[in-house]
Length: 164
Image 1 (cartoon, helix red, strand yellow):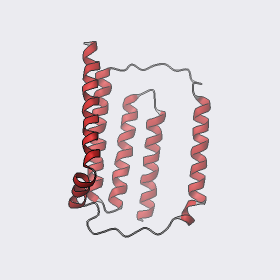
Image 2 (tube, one colour):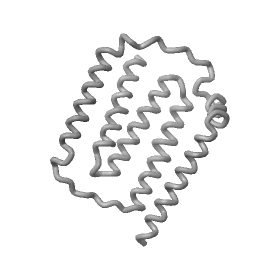
Image 3 (cartoon, one colour):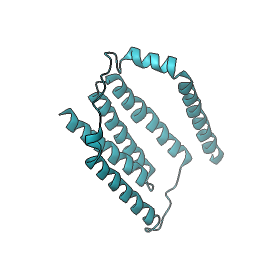
């Protein structure tokens, strides 16, 4: 049952990611596709018994980060541009063909080549494990990410204020 749910949520995540990337005409629809992708990834974490990581995935990424993206889009007041219908048709065809090839490889070759899953500890995905990993092992990456988000917000406000 959990393997079936994994494939369902994986398909939802891939479909949402493709919709986000291919939907260049409507930024808000692309952000909503990103929300669907993040919720599907959170469900996959829950299937792996990492409940904290699953909830954090949904709250932080699907909630806060996508809302930040939408605020930036609204502050910049981006207008929809008109593209000719045939623009990038060859690139889209190559992308779809490559995606179909990778999917065929996953279906035929990969299932027999996968090793057994390794056993994880009791505290996998728990508060203590995540806290120790975040503030002991990855503290530099955590701080750099917070500074990058701050710089992006300041830049969006400066760009929006220039037009007022």
